[in-house]
Image (tube, helix red, strand yellow):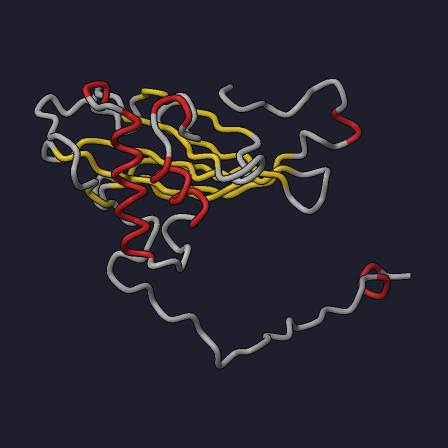
Length: 203
């Protein structure tokens, strides 16, 4: 039997709902857009190690909640309520991490707000023209978060227990933010790779 005879017949994908398209986001509704954080002091040094992380996150989440009006596009309502009602160590904010992601020798602030026992809001902040600015916002199940050579990788579970989704974000100088460069699947959970566990958060 020839190879072409044994191959499965090619099929053309059937596009569903071809005439229906999502509306573009209105100003302020895009979670990936670099956004100044109002209500926090300016930082002349340009280094996020001079900021108070909790104050930054509370101000950012409060502003997103104001813009959102409950739509959950920018911030989950549960996260907004928790951040508005909390103080100090009672806030569901992960320990802040300082790391240079832009390559300018100054640290960015990386942290996350835990919505519940599974979902979180990952947020990254830098300083632009002395103004604290959010350069990445991502709602996800954070199975792992890694930083290396200016890259921020977010690992998430998938519906297939063998695979882990890996979103790789890098700094884009022209757009002034952290943007997705590569999306891949890691087979670290595959049976043949037993004994080589998936990287865990913070590695």
